[in-house]
Length: 435
Image (cartoon, rainbow, N blue to C red; front, top):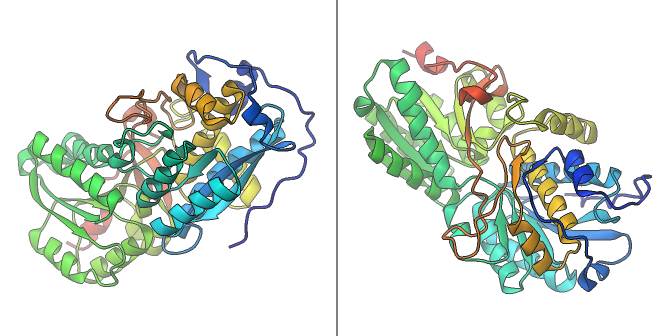
């Protein structure tokens, strides 16, 4: 895959942006973060007219579709910010690292820190990659800015230099269960304690976190949990699992998958006649247009619990529409999933933090990040990081997932109501056609 091209001069005069001007340009609403106008000696070592930031994503291999989409969001933010004059009067440059697996993530993090001498790394889309690369960054006291990996353990290690703006993975599974009780059960005319729920997930960090969250919440809310089945995302035959699920006969399937395993699951699921009344994915492949394209009309009615997607009430998520338009202009096609919106927003917040830090020196960045207090972003929620000593230090405690549904090839926000742009279609139309 081609490396990102380093942008030429934006044509904009170089100038220092005020706090108000920067936030207005980024579409963020500040509540009161401290401003530091002092540039440190470390920032002077950034070199020339650029600020270099390492960007670790899976750009090849099985996770490349979502990895590339995630990087694109950050790239949109970078290009827009550079057109506004950059940050601290310097243009922003991403130095990319391809990390198709955890070993590669470690190697790329070491390369970017040791050879490139970078002090800030961003990424990575996938939880195993985030766990591996962030450990390298922490050991070297380098900022690690995570904008995709949602597994809870990422922020449960007490790291000082790690910051994450995604919701926690356990919230995804929990939100799927809450939606099942509050919305699906009444629509089906089934009492919550009679609502049959099956949980299936890929067996790595991402899936396990979502599955654990769903299982815990289902037990707390008293739903009829039929079982929880993990599987390898590298599996090429999921028919035994599907036949087991079909025999159990759940009303609701809560599922966590990457894209390749998801396509295999539903190719075989449809062939074997597995049609629950409702399917709730929890991000990953369920957010991808590739899923909808492969499913055709059968995608309509499938839910996805996820980070904010682009088709959302603009008053709830100001700036999301503009982000989609900028993506279209740069890449000549519409966004493929909300993963790019998350990385777009995360990069914006990082640029704001750098501006307030006055430096790319890690301690200055860390101090500015911990002072961050943003009320609203294009994600629909704000940003405030859990402080050192907290059990989830570095986690954005204002982040939360929403409920989306595929309708006519588009992923529309359906819950909560204040964010919705469409009514949910219940039950899954494909299941009714196969009765």
